[in-house]
Image (cartoon, rainbow, N blue to C red; front, side):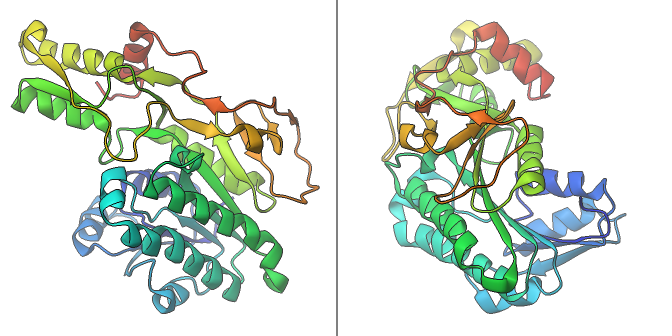
Length: 332
């Protein structure tokens, strides 16, 4: 799909962005343009990929439409990974979240239409479902902008689609590296609520979902990967046991401290609401939430069951299964 194509990865210096770039490089694209606002992270990325002559590094913000427009000149496919994604930061700085997650997404859409980009894929979050915080609300608005663009594209012909992620294990800012650091530096782990459950996906799963969505999208869809559910207490205990074993520490002395839910945080997450399920189809590995008035069909698809896809309702992995998953993903 990417051979000899020009690809723009917005927010490409993040964990998912880097993994996506590595994956796209295996198909010999004509060029990958990495667009982000942090010159130091771009420097580190350029060092990492110094042997690849088909990567360009563009400094710019998703909030700047004029700069985005230049970056998209001649581009075939755009991946928009730019976001303010941490719930507490977005709660404290709500309009900053609006400027990046909503206005920034609209800038991407407008520039893609102007440059007749073939496909645009936006990376969203499970927090966009029945949002209780600013981050989730802005992600939901961005999804709606992407879906509505399917009807407003005119003669541009651009296909717009979104992918909805759970918690991506091992990504920058994720909880597993934090737990490891706390065990070694503080001798205890802090958790918001031990019985809290979360959908978890690996970096490679996040990348493959994004690429599959790009491949099969017809316009306006939200793609939701089926993924395992993990209890926070089990995850903490597995990390404690592993870190202590590797560093000759007594795991019984490592306390798990409950600090309570943060502003805007949920006990359980949803990846698809019951209302959305009425418009969704099910594939073997994902759900596809179709836009209104959509008549497109998909191979090997069936109507999704009408139900909310929630971490409260799904079966939780056992502690041994959590350990197997982390070992398989090389996270412990």
